[in-house]
Length: 457
Ligand SMILES: Nc1ncnc2c1ncn2[C@@H]1O[C@H](COP(=O)(O)OP(=O)(O)OP(=O)(O)O)[C@@H](O)[C@H]1O
Ligand SMILES: [Mg+2]
Figure (cartoon, rainbow, N blue to C red):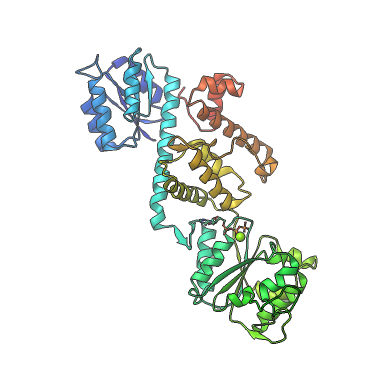
């Protein structure tokens, strides 16, 4: 159970709070500032509820503020919920301005306070997770040529890259769009003996077929109209380096033969040329289509595949990388916060929920773009779903629920809508319930069901 420190000098209210919270938290009730600070130093509770009117200044706020300042000095990330007298809004606002998390005015509405306390723990834990992630970056995370990862699948890929890089064998990288294929190709190059040679990328799908041959293999003067001079192709450019053939599945049949020949005897002929030119270039290729299907339908030569696909690296889609999603999200958040000089601490609970459950059809590239957008948009300390551009297009159709039962999908939507409504209304349950079109008690029931808050009854 999480530790909750309640600082309250009124015996009656203290009893009431104890009764309300004892089921869900391990409680300590302090009745003055020194007692509270003493307990805080020893047990470091994440959340504190603090009555500002404490003895010997029970009618004023000096002791309450002293206690608040001391706690925040000891541990600035503590979530302190301040409780003030019925009309003392000013002190409440002052407390928030110096770092209190939230405030409540007496008389206390136990249910509302319980929601605030539960959210405070949640937020604390998220901030802590963010901090740990940042910390872990130096320890467990591998960063290879700008590519970061910690999940088992990526760890495996990093070790494969290390193994295959030093040899000269061709490598085929498979993965959905935005999974980092080009980064893998660069990593292979920079860990190889060819690292001081050129890394030359060419996108086979982006260049018109009639130009691609000359682009790859070069041409002799007069080879075709407009060929005023002899030109080297990318294969030759990449001499002593690596040629990255992106979207190899798009390579036209005639060029597949030429490439196969190059892979077999390391020689090429320029367009319009007759001499064989020996070239020392390593081929790394990438595809986001399933090559075996292309082979079956006759669009890709099987013999070329046997040459080029000896070593295949399969990049998992982002949605299958577990904790890497939040790791990368935090990395990008740091990178862009620095770039745009923004002070962003992390992600709100609703954002984390969304980032973790989203399908990521555009994989790491999409994540990077969304975080960049969020950093630009955000004017708070925590990134909200709005900033990430999720609210305009909350679902990717039913594909977002692939593999779930109807009940699981329903639960997911329900939870996401609750979190979003509560976040949007800053924890105001009545408003959130109104927006969701349900009664307050129903909302409490649903929050309990989804573990968002467990009222003691
Ligand atoms: N593991 C990672 N860590 C950090 N950044 C990454 C990682 N993977 C990809 N990226 C970033 O995501 C973006 C997309 O990566 P990349 O271009 O390598 O993907 P791709 O698979 O080649 O995509 P496409 O199929 O669209 O060509 C780049 O900005 C890259 O820096
Ligand atoms: Mg690419």
